[in-house]
Image 1: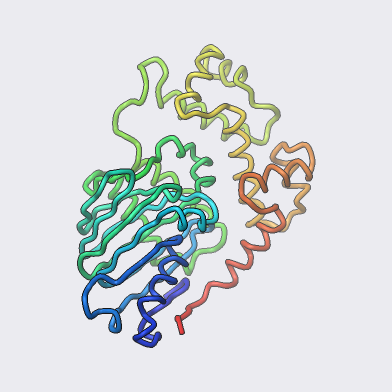
Image 2 (image 1 turned 135 degrees about the vertical axis):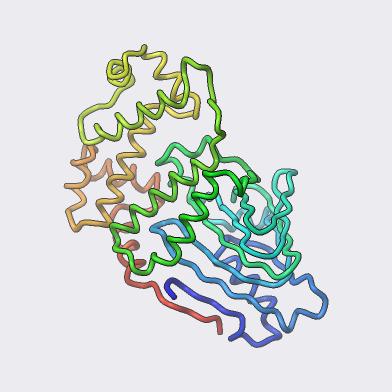
Length: 326
């Protein structure tokens, strides 16, 4: 079994409720947690396995009845912003955020936002899977506009079934994947998640819709290593007005420049993990004026410098191990 593994079976019974709070907060972001079944305090059972899909955390968990909440203190203790996908595999629980509450049964999924208060209650022994996605990663696939607090995903919808099935397959193969394959799996996971979130119908008028945006994004992807990618260049390539280009990107609250910058940073991030090239070479390839400009943009987006990210990525690849709480 790959990844990191923790089990309360190795913990003295009297310490298990407190250790469960620490473990859940360590692997699922900070929570206040309490065991809810009378008399279960000293016999509480739970385990957690965490695997990394590059910078996405895939966390499998089995636990008994308990409840948790994220309030002001937990929100302030959270480092960064995340969208989390919770998939119930067996058992029952409730999840609430922003006044909406979901009653989760096997096969159900919900997406919640780390920046807003939330609560949950496990009603019976539960097996669940969580996917924690940094907000900046969603920007790479223009996914920020599709996410909001407490989104219930229809487990019967084809796109949701595709996502959950993919995560099932990925969970079993992650330990054997090369670093390049893990990066590809990470990008596929993001695309499938955004696909599961999007409604089936058009999101704007018939003249400015998602199909045109998709075509423009494919064009941008093909020209990322070229020179300046401007609204005018996009308009000319797609035989539309510059105003139409602005309208297409305003649908998701973005500009062409932001989308291009984020995608170039994503390409550079991939090169940092998959090659030993000098940072200056990578910066030049993805059209940053110099290493200093690239480092500032990279740190502003990812929270660490390019050299720090490369070191962390290599350490993560070398450091996957099994652990037990003691």
